Length: 347
Image (tube, rainbow, N blue to C red; front, side, top):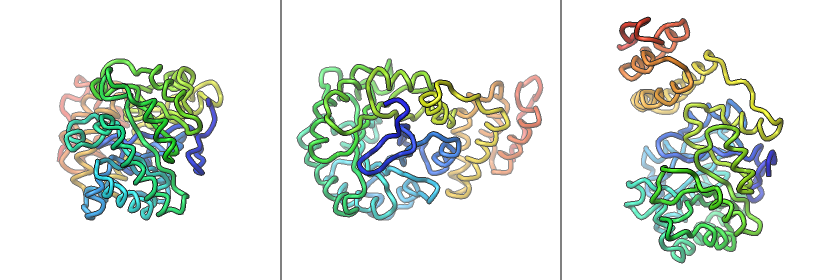
């Protein structure tokens, strides 16, 4: 399926590449920056609490926020209460979701402790009953227009690999696509991704597309996942945090055989600036400052020597200080401590 746009139910994407729903990172601002670089076929929201959505809690509504440019969009829910998930799935349809996804793969403790995420891999019959309710709710709310999908891991641990059988069963109840992270819950993000395991899921289903996920950080690794697993698409998360143009490069590799030239330093700085501006537009100043201090470490990985820049942004107290630091870097400063003895821009 190299170079073939992905189809999920009746939804045809512009590529076979998806931005993953990584908790705390895939907000509307980052989705828009990634889309602006090209290559993103489908982007996913952060993990959404069904209780938060139904109660109208500000944090959940903020994570679910989207707009006309953020399309197509998958809204990902997590939880274990079938009725609450079904109600939240209908809420998602009513609020612009092009795809409704259920998280069965998150290994993070705060999700697992609430019996959500990859805990669902431990009781497959219960998970299937739950998912059947969600599929029915989405079909009813959308008139069959919106597909329901699932994201999973290979299993809870190496002794309980359930992904192939679970994917086959999910297909039988109307799930339109399955994303598989090629590790178990016990492995979290350690070690190599099991491409053979993803391939076994591909072989287990009849019609629905299987999307591979895990450790795709270069166009070459994207191509290898497609070739070695036979999956129909690739979902990318952490690999894009420092290089939101990775989707563009992966799609170009598939369709032309080579990746474009990496963006210039000025273009990279402009992406950082744009992300921060969007955060200020869509979230509070406090949220924007928290995120840019957190994200500059990722963004800085592709800027070369820039420790003083990262320090200046981490110490910034106001947006103006962030903008001044970025401007100083563009002019040649904030690169080496020997050149810039003290970070600037701290308000």
